[in-house]
Amino acid sequence: MPDSSNLTFPATDGVDPASVPQRQLRSGAKMPAIGLGTFGSDHVPHAAVADAVKHAAALGYRHFDCAAVYGNEDLIGESLQHIMRSGIRREELWITSKLWNDKHAEEDVIPACERSLHHLKLDYLDLYLIHWPFPNHHPPHCDVSARNPNAVPYIHERYMRTWRKLEELVDRGLVRHIGTSNMTIPKMDLILRDARILPAANEMELHPHFQQPEFFAYLIDKGIVPIGYSPLGSPARPERDRTADDTVPAEDPVILGIAERLGVHPAVVCIKWAVQRGQIPIPFSSRRANYLANLHAVVRDPLTNDDMRAIAAIDRNCRLIKGQVFLWRDNQSWQDLWDMNGSITPP
Ligand SMILES: NC(=O)c1ccc[n+]([C@@H]2O[C@H](COP(=O)([O-])OP(=O)(O)OC[C@H]3O[C@@H](n4cnc5c(N)ncnc54)[C@H](OP(=O)(O)O)[C@@H]3O)[C@@H](O)[C@H]2O)c1
Image 1 (cartoon, rainbow, N blue to C red):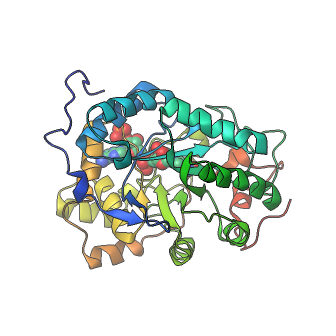
Image 2 (cartoon, rainbow, N blue to C red):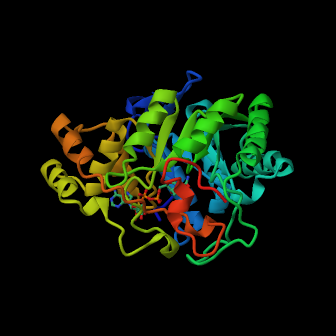
């Protein structure tokens, strides 16, 4: 963990936040085109994540991707206080949080958001997402076989009842934008049909080996900003999210070749590709040198068109975060969560 006792804002080796690209949402608001992830994958201590938030802000990060289920929002809230005391205004920050799966019931949504706000010590969130489209939850640190006995499939009417409460959060001024996460096209079709306030963003797995080209194009067409999680292929993800067929995007020969030419770590190439493609990557790191490199990635040495074409060609359709723990029936395959045949998987 870097020493925080003499942390100065801005750090002398940082990046001017004004030079970091931004993406415009349908509201006209702009959000930084890279954020810092804050899920420590069950093994990075909460204090180390919160410390990274502080140091990352000093280096020029303004966007932080949080969630109630990461269990660290209270410590991140202290870091945000420190950041704002250092002279960075609230309006310069972009803070996302997410409603966890055990809080989808109508009466739980507003209190859950208020709890995140309380922990983060904020008056409002810039973006609030429904973390998963299923109200199925699992205990922290569980393994891949864990199942919630009350697990259910996607039930659109139920999801919309939750969504209406998110809309109310916007009406009440507690949240500026609302969005979805871990969605599919058939589910999104229904949400776009029925929502009063449309999703501003969808958070989804996106990296060179899982590019989701069809869904990506759909979102851009509908004016929904794609936020890409696990942009480096989540090398430290929990065991429950690993299978023998998983590939490693940062070890792909195309990525390695570009990294060698530019003299950077392959992770940096993944970030450059993400931002130039038009999604917002939210790489996690608890190492100052790494999150600094990821920020430098978006302001230095852009990839060439040939690089972008070469990376487009290495998609392996390899989903890493499969979500098995959210399945609702015995002997089901994780593919059922993702509506693989183009319609919502029936119960
Ligand atoms: N909406 C959702 O359902 C969902 C699901 C998963 C994740 N997320 C969000 O997305 C964020 C990022 O995803 P992720 O944490 O799964 O994976 P990731 O960002 O793809 O990978 C993070 C890992 O990469 C390493 N790393 C970062 N920068 C590096 C660099 N420049 N060089 C070498 N290694 C580097 C980090 O190690 P060091 O710490 O050692 O740098 C860390 O182990 C999460 O933190 C969370 O905020 C959301």
